[in-house]
Amino acid sequence: MDDGERQESLFGGADRNDGQERCDDLDDDELAPDAPGAGPGQLTLDPAFDYRSDRKSGRPRRPRISLRDAIAALDVEQRMAGAAAAGLVLSMFAPWWQRPGKLGLSNSGVSQFTFCELALVLVAVAVLLLLYRRAEGREFHLPLSDGTLAALAGVWCCFLLVYRVFDPPSLFIDGAETGYDPRWGIFLALGFAVLLIVAGVRGRRRYHAGESEAIAADEDATAIAPASHHP
Image 1 (cartoon, one colour):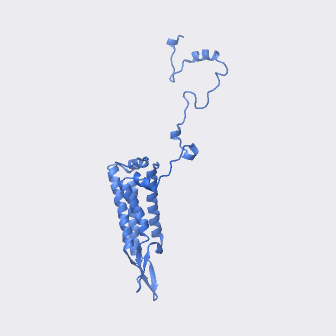
Image 2: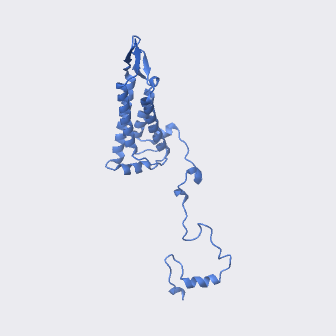
Image 3: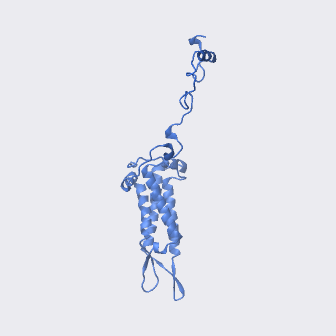
């Protein structure tokens, strides 16, 4: 069969008879199989799509960035959420309670540490860690968008603080149990929790208005470049 009349196969090769004629003229070395991944039609994985971790795949890890660079990489709503989360933690060192009695001594939030205070710290640290990872440009998926998660974190903190106001620590004086009176520190913490809600809602409306949570979460999972922020 002439070259012009050969029928090409689906993958671009010549017909079977022509391949047999060629094999007769090849040496043994030329008939040796190609190295894995080098021959045509063989599936190879691009290192960029390696499912393994950076350490296993040999890719360099992203460098750590400073706190100043992390703040610069965040947008206004993210900075607001970070300030609210940091304020929640710092407000626990302010006067939360006034002891009953003539002296009226004040106690900070950490001096009466319970499950509520522990939950507040964990939520605030989780928000700060999320923001720092976003500022580093790391890609990771969460079940909800960042704004929704921040707003829910603020709602949970508000619930814990209101519960704590109505369930203060107590002290026995002359055999009678007397509760502590709340002071300005716990209301300051409540204000930071409300600020966290506002930051989350504003971020959700600004960047994902009209989008479902699934789409918004996928968009937030896309890494941002370090030391850059949304316009």
